[in-house]
Amino acid sequence: MDQYNYTPDPFNRSAQAVTTLVSNAMKRVYFKMTLALIVTALTALWASTSYGYVSFLVTHTWLIWVLVAAELGLVIAISGAINRLSNAAASGLFYLFAVVNGLMLCTIFLAYSPGVIAKTFFITAGTFGAMSVYGYFTSNDLSRIGSYLIMALFGLIIASVVNIFLHSSTLDWIVSIAGVFIFIGLTAWDTQQIKLRAMSTAPEGVSKLATIGALTLYLDFINLFLYLLRIFGNRD
Image (cartoon, rainbow, N blue to C red):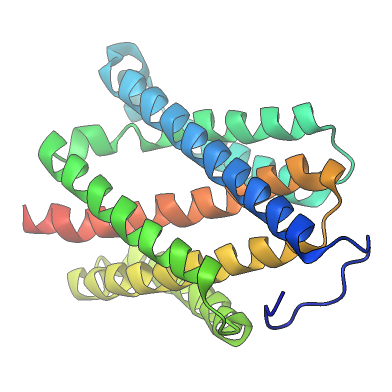
């Protein structure tokens, strides 16, 4: 294999065997990510049509913080303990995270029209797909770009927090545009990183790699969707 940055396979497999393993691993990553997106969408749709849930969420804002804490806890648990979890447990926590995120995202059905949501979803899917394909097939090393994107992401988070108090429409617009570009770049970089990890993964480790890879790309997709939704929603 002529992939840059490729180190000798620790299992002494043939190039064809590694290529097959990587292909199978990426298929499982995309399958799990897609299934999680479906779970999130169905959960959000159900929650948005449940008068009892919406009323409780609106009148008890502490629930939002509980959901946020649950999301952070699940991401940390999956990412930090992936090697100690069974395959079933890791997958279960991932799909539980998708459910919790759906309970959080139900408000978009109340804030935006179905047409805007559908349009944004298809734009997100096309953009995400193109950048993930690029990240998978490119021979360029994206690691340096990835480092800059991570720093930019921290800046984006800080700017978002600051704007909670400033309520600046200009800053909100800048944050939305920046968020789109950051997660477009992260999609390509994360895809490349997952591919590289798959190259040196034992067959029995593919399931856990698929879970952590699916979680990473799921977060890229959701964040890209939300930032694009803020842009198109404001234009509606």
